[in-house]
Image: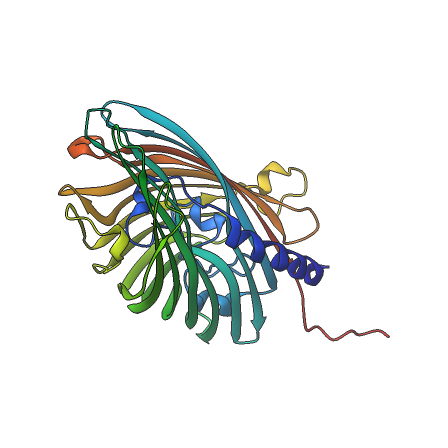
Length: 408
């Protein structure tokens, strides 16, 4: 049954991932757009904390985790989000629904494999600057698209306590932007359309270690390193003037964008199948992500930093009398310096996550629900502030593959 679900979902989501507009943030104008969270909803509802070697939940943030899987796991998730975007003088609201990830993990003895599809970044904005003064210039900017990621990874269990792993990631996508400028009292406007095809490969290494520090208490640690890589961008440009039937086609522009290296540390303590408290620290170098159509003198890039604290609690995972005692309750707090500086003001993201995992009776499968709310940016220095709330849903199905039948 799970095989049929995987095939159907892969076909559907492969189409949806190209068609969706995954963000409504004005900050997605810069670079390759808003960077999306790389992880499942189980980890996202703990603010990204993913330190435990789990046998039934897939951890796609660290490939070393695949070696701990006890069953074949298929997981898929999506989000409905609302944004209130405000400046110092006005505000507006936006909504969007997004595909978050599709992934499969397969146990192979001491090895484990994982593969899937998820967005790396999303672009989705409409920005207007209207000026009615005589001879003044008004502009309208619109962008959509983003970069997707296909990955394949292997994990290996060196000892019962220690895993290592690596994965290969192929990034691909398309970003389209339109810029319209008009002068007050002048009939014709100028339209510039850019279409950028992006592609590249990068690698990721990870390790996880856990050990007992008391009779019912475990220590969990994790380390993940993503190598810096190149993202090739091939852009075509069309310039049009209203009322002129001839469009000026610009020469194609090839640009090499630099995705910086990233290192992530995690540690936590807890009682297996009962509770966990953990923290994650992530540091990423300064990227070179500006293309010719979104380069601005007042914008620069800096190092990315993330601090997160999160965990879960299960009242009684083996209870037969109470279904609610088997629910996994999750929560987390996060602070991110996003690596973008506009008007000498760093753009930061502060948020809180809440979630619950509902087991499907008689199986190791589960349904997960999460809420994330927070604030991105500021109204200072001429910037905008986003107050966001995201509602997420995911399904995690578990089954045994490659088991020889004992009966004919």
